[in-house]
Length: 266
Ligand SMILES: [Zn+2]
Ligand SMILES: [Zn+2]
Image (cartoon, rainbow, N blue to C red):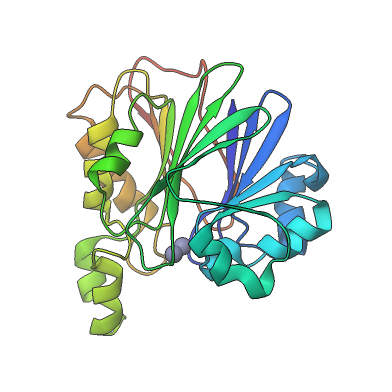
Protein backbone atom coordinates (compact mmCIF):
# COMPACT_ATOMS: atom_id res chain seq x y z
CA UNK A 1 0.00 0.00 0.00
CA UNK A 2 1.16 3.53 -0.68
CA UNK A 3 -0.23 6.90 0.34
CA UNK A 4 0.48 10.57 -0.33
CA UNK A 5 -0.92 13.64 1.37
CA UNK A 6 -1.45 16.16 -1.44
CA UNK A 7 -1.83 18.91 1.12
CA UNK A 8 -3.40 19.31 4.55
CA UNK A 9 -4.70 22.35 6.44
CA UNK A 10 -7.54 24.82 6.53
CA UNK A 11 -6.97 25.83 2.89
CA UNK A 12 -7.54 22.35 1.50
CA UNK A 13 -7.09 18.63 2.16
CA UNK A 14 -6.66 15.61 -0.11
CA UNK A 15 -4.87 12.30 0.27
CA UNK A 16 -4.28 9.47 -2.21
CA UNK A 17 -4.40 5.82 -1.11
CA UNK A 18 -3.04 3.17 -3.48
CA UNK A 19 -3.54 -0.57 -2.97
CA UNK A 20 -2.70 -3.01 -5.74
CA UNK A 21 -3.71 -1.31 -8.96
CA UNK A 22 -6.46 0.78 -7.36
CA UNK A 23 -6.39 4.37 -6.14
CA UNK A 24 -8.80 6.16 -3.85
CA UNK A 25 -8.81 9.84 -2.93
CA UNK A 26 -9.79 10.90 0.57
CA UNK A 27 -11.28 14.42 0.56
CA UNK A 28 -11.18 16.91 -2.27
CA UNK A 29 -10.52 20.28 -0.72
CA UNK A 30 -9.02 21.69 -3.91
CA UNK A 31 -10.81 22.72 -7.11
CA UNK A 32 -10.13 20.56 -10.20
CA UNK A 33 -7.33 22.66 -11.63
CA UNK A 34 -5.35 22.67 -8.38
CA UNK A 35 -6.16 19.01 -7.72
CA UNK A 36 -4.81 18.07 -11.15
CA UNK A 37 -1.64 20.07 -10.55
CA UNK A 38 -0.96 18.34 -7.24
CA UNK A 39 -1.72 14.86 -8.59
CA UNK A 40 0.45 15.35 -11.66
CA UNK A 41 3.35 16.49 -9.46
CA UNK A 42 3.24 12.90 -8.14
CA UNK A 43 2.79 11.51 -11.69
CA UNK A 44 -0.74 10.38 -10.84
CA UNK A 45 -3.29 10.80 -13.62
CA UNK A 46 -6.58 12.09 -12.12
CA UNK A 47 -8.44 9.58 -14.30
CA UNK A 48 -6.61 6.70 -12.53
CA UNK A 49 -8.51 7.41 -9.30
CA UNK A 50 -11.58 5.20 -8.91
CA UNK A 51 -13.30 6.57 -5.86
CA UNK A 52 -13.50 9.63 -3.65
CA UNK A 53 -14.40 9.34 0.03
CA UNK A 54 -15.37 12.64 1.67
CA UNK A 55 -14.87 12.77 5.45
CA UNK A 56 -17.21 15.76 5.98
CA UNK A 57 -18.72 18.70 4.20
CA UNK A 58 -16.45 21.52 5.35
CA UNK A 59 -15.04 23.61 2.54
CA UNK A 60 -11.41 22.58 3.10
CA UNK A 61 -12.39 18.91 2.60
CA UNK A 62 -15.17 19.05 0.05
CA UNK A 63 -14.76 22.20 -2.02
CA UNK A 64 -13.71 20.28 -5.15
CA UNK A 65 -15.61 17.05 -4.45
CA UNK A 66 -18.55 17.38 -6.84
CA UNK A 67 -16.61 19.06 -9.63
CA UNK A 68 -13.62 16.69 -9.48
CA UNK A 69 -15.84 13.60 -9.24
CA UNK A 70 -17.86 14.74 -12.26
CA UNK A 71 -14.82 15.71 -14.30
CA UNK A 72 -12.88 12.49 -13.80
CA UNK A 73 -15.77 10.05 -13.20
CA UNK A 74 -14.82 9.22 -9.64
CA UNK A 75 -17.36 7.21 -7.65
CA UNK A 76 -18.08 9.46 -4.68
CA UNK A 77 -18.86 8.21 -1.15
CA UNK A 78 -20.01 10.31 1.80
CA UNK A 79 -22.00 9.69 4.97
CA UNK A 80 -25.71 10.44 4.82
CA UNK A 81 -25.28 13.65 6.83
CA UNK A 82 -22.35 14.80 4.72
CA UNK A 83 -24.25 13.95 1.58
CA UNK A 84 -27.28 15.98 2.60
CA UNK A 85 -25.03 18.94 3.41
CA UNK A 86 -23.39 18.65 0.00
CA UNK A 87 -26.59 18.02 -1.94
CA UNK A 88 -26.61 21.35 -3.72
CA UNK A 89 -23.08 20.73 -4.91
CA UNK A 90 -23.04 17.00 -5.63
CA UNK A 91 -25.31 15.12 -7.99
CA UNK A 92 -24.35 11.44 -8.08
CA UNK A 93 -22.69 9.12 -5.59
CA UNK A 94 -23.17 6.73 -2.73
CA UNK A 95 -24.08 7.57 0.84
CA UNK A 96 -23.29 5.39 3.84
CA UNK A 97 -24.11 5.33 7.53
CA UNK A 98 -21.09 6.29 9.65
CA UNK A 99 -19.62 3.07 11.04
CA UNK A 100 -20.11 1.24 7.75
CA UNK A 101 -17.25 -0.42 5.87
CA UNK A 102 -16.93 0.46 2.19
CA UNK A 103 -15.95 -2.52 0.05
CA UNK A 104 -13.92 -0.93 -2.71
CA UNK A 105 -12.15 -2.95 -5.39
CA UNK A 106 -8.62 -3.16 -3.95
CA UNK A 107 -9.20 -1.97 -0.39
CA UNK A 108 -11.85 -1.85 2.28
CA UNK A 109 -12.45 1.43 4.10
CA UNK A 110 -13.95 1.38 7.57
CA UNK A 111 -15.68 4.60 8.57
CA UNK A 112 -15.76 5.77 12.19
CA UNK A 113 -17.97 8.59 13.45
CA UNK A 114 -15.94 11.39 15.02
CA UNK A 115 -16.75 14.41 17.22
CA UNK A 116 -16.56 17.52 15.04
CA UNK A 117 -18.95 20.35 14.21
CA UNK A 118 -20.17 18.89 10.93
CA UNK A 119 -23.29 16.88 10.05
CA UNK A 120 -21.86 13.33 10.15
CA UNK A 121 -18.05 13.47 10.03
CA UNK A 122 -15.94 10.31 9.89
CA UNK A 123 -12.38 9.09 10.32
CA UNK A 124 -11.26 6.26 8.03
CA UNK A 125 -9.23 3.06 8.32
CA UNK A 126 -8.24 1.69 4.92
CA UNK A 127 -7.06 -1.92 4.59
CA UNK A 128 -5.35 -3.18 1.42
CA UNK A 129 -6.84 -6.40 0.09
CA UNK A 130 -3.53 -7.76 -1.19
CA UNK A 131 -1.20 -7.09 1.75
CA UNK A 132 -3.54 -6.39 4.67
CA UNK A 133 -1.73 -3.14 5.40
CA UNK A 134 -3.81 -0.60 7.31
CA UNK A 135 -3.72 3.19 7.22
CA UNK A 136 -5.74 5.36 9.61
CA UNK A 137 -6.83 8.86 8.59
CA UNK A 138 -8.00 11.12 11.39
CA UNK A 139 -8.53 14.81 10.88
CA UNK A 140 -10.94 17.44 12.12
CA UNK A 141 -11.67 15.81 15.46
CA UNK A 142 -12.62 17.71 18.62
CA UNK A 143 -11.93 14.86 21.01
CA UNK A 144 -11.04 11.21 20.56
CA UNK A 145 -13.79 8.80 21.54
CA UNK A 146 -13.09 5.27 22.71
CA UNK A 147 -14.52 3.83 19.49
CA UNK A 148 -12.14 5.97 17.45
CA UNK A 149 -9.08 4.90 19.41
CA UNK A 150 -10.14 1.24 19.31
CA UNK A 151 -10.53 1.40 15.53
CA UNK A 152 -6.91 2.56 15.19
CA UNK A 153 -5.30 -0.59 16.61
CA UNK A 154 -2.75 -2.51 14.55
CA UNK A 155 -2.16 0.27 12.00
CA UNK A 156 0.82 0.42 9.65
CA UNK A 157 0.53 4.21 9.31
CA UNK A 158 -1.50 6.93 10.99
CA UNK A 159 -2.29 10.33 9.47
CA UNK A 160 -3.45 12.40 12.43
CA UNK A 161 -4.59 15.95 12.97
CA UNK A 162 -2.23 17.96 15.17
CA UNK A 163 -3.96 21.29 14.76
CA UNK A 164 -2.73 23.71 17.37
CA UNK A 165 -0.57 24.34 20.36
CA UNK A 166 -2.86 25.16 23.26
CA UNK A 167 -0.73 28.08 24.48
CA UNK A 168 -0.36 29.56 21.01
CA UNK A 169 -4.11 29.29 20.48
CA UNK A 170 -4.87 31.20 23.70
CA UNK A 171 -2.29 33.87 22.87
CA UNK A 172 -3.13 33.97 19.16
CA UNK A 173 -5.09 36.39 16.99
CA UNK A 174 -8.51 34.73 17.20
CA UNK A 175 -11.45 36.18 19.16
CA UNK A 176 -12.52 34.12 22.21
CA UNK A 177 -15.50 32.57 20.40
CA UNK A 178 -13.27 31.17 17.66
CA UNK A 179 -10.73 29.88 20.20
CA UNK A 180 -13.52 28.14 22.08
CA UNK A 181 -14.75 26.49 18.90
CA UNK A 182 -11.30 25.27 17.86
CA UNK A 183 -10.37 23.98 21.33
CA UNK A 184 -13.87 22.67 22.09
CA UNK A 185 -15.05 19.05 22.05
CA UNK A 186 -16.26 19.39 18.45
CA UNK A 187 -13.35 21.43 17.14
CA UNK A 188 -9.82 20.30 16.39
CA UNK A 189 -7.12 18.19 18.10
CA UNK A 190 -4.31 20.05 19.84
CA UNK A 191 -0.75 18.78 19.68
CA UNK A 192 -1.20 17.38 23.17
CA UNK A 193 -4.48 15.62 22.31
CA UNK A 194 -2.95 14.22 19.11
CA UNK A 195 -0.11 12.81 21.18
CA UNK A 196 -2.58 11.01 23.41
CA UNK A 197 -4.30 9.41 20.39
CA UNK A 198 -1.00 8.36 18.80
CA UNK A 199 0.31 6.96 22.08
CA UNK A 200 -2.87 4.93 22.56
CA UNK A 201 -2.41 3.17 19.23
CA UNK A 202 1.41 3.08 19.11
CA UNK A 203 3.02 -0.33 18.58
CA UNK A 204 6.25 -1.64 17.10
CA UNK A 205 4.68 -2.32 13.71
CA UNK A 206 3.50 1.26 13.24
CA UNK A 207 5.75 2.53 10.44
CA UNK A 208 4.82 6.18 10.58
CA UNK A 209 2.76 8.93 12.14
CA UNK A 210 2.08 11.83 9.77
CA UNK A 211 0.89 15.01 11.48
CA UNK A 212 -1.80 16.82 9.53
CA UNK A 213 -4.04 19.89 9.40
CA UNK A 214 -1.64 22.13 11.33
CA UNK A 215 -2.94 25.62 12.03
CA UNK A 216 -0.95 28.25 10.16
CA UNK A 217 -1.30 30.72 13.03
CA UNK A 218 -1.39 28.62 16.19
CA UNK A 219 1.18 25.92 15.47
CA UNK A 220 4.47 25.25 13.72
CA UNK A 221 5.93 22.07 12.20
CA UNK A 222 8.75 22.16 14.74
CA UNK A 223 6.40 22.52 17.71
CA UNK A 224 3.99 19.80 16.56
CA UNK A 225 6.87 17.47 15.77
CA UNK A 226 8.58 18.03 19.09
CA UNK A 227 5.36 17.42 21.01
CA UNK A 228 4.67 14.15 19.18
CA UNK A 229 8.28 13.05 19.49
CA UNK A 230 8.26 13.60 23.25
CA UNK A 231 5.05 11.62 23.65
CA UNK A 232 5.95 8.72 21.36
CA UNK A 233 9.44 8.36 22.85
CA UNK A 234 7.68 6.92 25.90
CA UNK A 235 6.00 4.19 23.84
CA UNK A 236 7.10 1.18 21.79
CA UNK A 237 6.87 3.25 18.58
CA UNK A 238 10.03 2.96 16.44
CA UNK A 239 8.83 4.47 13.17
CA UNK A 240 8.98 7.88 11.57
CA UNK A 241 7.18 11.09 12.47
CA UNK A 242 6.50 13.43 9.56
CA UNK A 243 4.64 16.69 9.28
CA UNK A 244 2.43 17.25 6.26
CA UNK A 245 2.07 20.73 4.83
CA UNK A 246 -0.52 22.83 3.07
CA UNK A 247 1.40 23.35 -0.14
CA UNK A 248 3.78 20.43 -0.43
CA UNK A 249 2.69 16.83 -1.16
CA UNK A 250 4.45 14.24 1.00
CA UNK A 251 4.55 10.45 1.00
CA UNK A 252 3.20 8.57 3.99
CA UNK A 253 5.97 6.08 4.92
CA UNK A 254 4.67 2.51 4.67
CA UNK A 255 5.83 -1.01 4.01
CA UNK A 256 9.42 -2.09 4.55
CA UNK A 257 10.60 1.39 5.37
CA UNK A 258 11.14 0.60 9.04
CA UNK A 259 14.26 2.08 10.59
CA UNK A 260 15.49 0.57 13.84
CA UNK A 261 15.72 3.93 15.54
CA UNK A 262 12.86 6.39 15.74
CA UNK A 263 13.57 8.98 13.06
CA UNK A 264 12.16 12.41 12.46
CA UNK A 265 11.64 14.65 9.49
CA UNK A 266 9.28 17.23 8.09
ZN1 LIG B 1 -10.58 20.74 8.02
ZN1 LIG C 1 -13.96 20.38 9.53
